[in-house]
Image 1: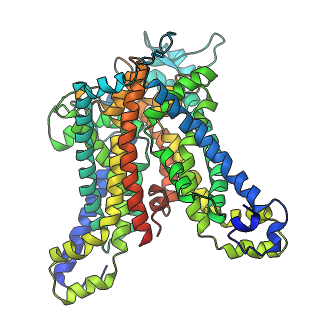
Image 2 (image 1 turned 45 degrees about the vertical axis):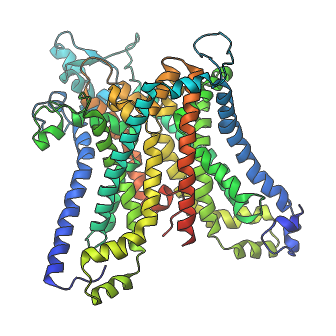
Image 3 (image 1 turned 90 degrees about the horizontal axis):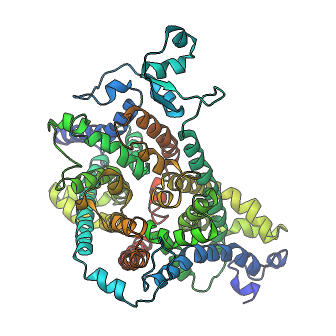
Length: 301
Length: 319
């Protein structure tokens, strides 16, 4: 490649030939970042791919023995791991559904003549900017069965949230909904404000009912952006670790990331945990692919 | 929305306003509660029923920064009178300040952890935004073979679950002696934020008209000079917004810090929950630590408010 081929500026420009060539600037700007990501992201992943085929334990000095696909086979046949998958799926569905209902609902309310709309929107967005670990910590105080403000405000007496195996996962999901509904709201607002006003005016002239307007105009036009929010939140909820780990230690809230953390850093089954990491990775890559497809669709509009 | 016309619509709008206010109050209540707890005397923090009205005091913040131990017996009157006001607050709470052999006040672990968070978040932000801006410029202005694939590769590194990356990184760090070091976490957070920084900055740089640089080149600037003197100043707002986002992400990060650090380089997110420990936790002190830690992010959220949409969607959605 020559300088003239790579530049997007006027290729005839004599100016581009002074100083460092465009080619070397391009390489100087891009290659360090790519190398950095390869060394600190791709290389470690290859490293753990190798370990996933061994019985390596990082807590001992014993050398790793190659055991082929045994880790994968055992993991996929382990009912406890499947249970972790089920817990994670339940968590993803409950918390993402909750976020969509609350987030989109609030966005619909906000998409009107509301005084101090900017200030209110910013205040509502605050929860999602906070540290999940610290949010988990102070929700522990809110959920406390005896002195927690939630039971007091809702008049629930000494209802157990986090110590109750059936409730704990929902408690974590509620906290997640509190934190991330604002994200769905933010994206929905962007979608709602992009709906052309003349469509609503036309609907009003035709005396269309508000339900009809919502399902035939609002929803279809907001759907692509809402879909991005849903996929993004699904991906994040699938990876969730901080909230559930800090809020409870119930077996019923052991999502995949927590199982992986325990396997790797408490039970020191390094080889097997690498295999589980790869299984998770495949799921995340699949969701990411869908996400990027939708991103490109929205960008094209 | 369309102007309000009929009485029915006006009622509907009023209803919407009331609902919005209600929702806002509900959403802010948890933040209000933890902030209120940070200003309560210890005996009011965990009352049944919860105490809503109280006289605020700063003793939780004093206790947050000092190492202290339970009082065996009440301090003598001279001792109490001779102590500075902040030490009297600790006495009032039934505790005394721990001193070193030479009588110096001992600091708690909190200021250290807070500083660790600050050092690590700032350093990784500078690195990620610096490298990210250069890379974004490279992708924005020059032809790169397989550009979309490279950008997808960069994005994909961000989608990996932290615990998944942490396992091999932990093994590598052990070999190179980087566990529980500032450098170790800075590298991890830089790598974690890099894709975000590249994607966001590419969006900002794409919006700067090429004509600006072309004019500079015609005026005799070299390409590098044009980049530093024309493109960077034009991209300043974008760089600032990207930096604040990267800072917040690094500041809030928990999983890597939990796995890679335990003392020397430990940041605040794994430290603050670890204070609960065993026995009866002093929720006022934990709340004080939480509020101080959340405050910078709350301020930044207000500064960032016009860029939140763009940042949270990785630069995909712009207004």
